[in-house]
Image (cartoon, rainbow over all chains, first blue to last red; front, top):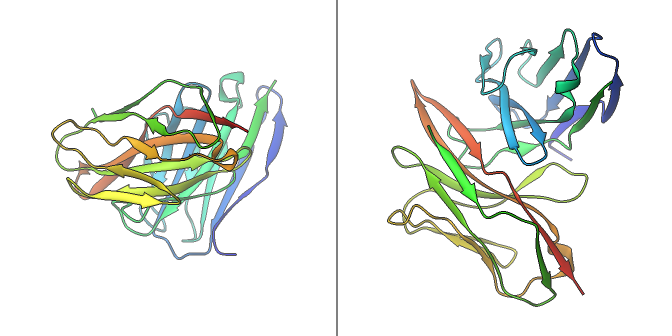
Length: 114
Length: 115
């Protein structure tokens, strides 16, 4: 089925470790996004991309880096994980820049930093 | 900046009860408005949308009307089912200038429907 695929689904990291979350979409969407979801906070935008080779900062970018080397993939990196980065991470993509057709979300990555 | 405020949860209803989840927004210009639903253990799914004032979005028995005069987009359903138990997010899409847009979410409202 077409959609957004996130890997891994679960991960436990020790403070200071690094990791990369992978997001892949097969809908030929130009726009891709990384959000984090925390209890009582809703979803907050970390970084986004408006096309292959481009990235931009969202609301809460500190401690994260991203890359969009291929149109279908959007990678989120944590260089030195901190307990404050314990969260559920969602990737999303959209066809148009206004998102009027809605965003398509992946099923999420639950990350725990101990 | 843009913001979305939705009613605090959790909301617990009996099956076949009427549902209203309030959502109000603050934005410049003319945003598009959305309701997303998140079932346990899953990502968000688009439930319905409205792109201009007085539009009514509807899907799966849910509906919401874009009210510019009251800056509201309340979600309603006439008769809820146990399968409607989920977290519901109100969201808006607005211009950030230079052709850039951003989706802003409310904090979510958890709905539990009991038999």
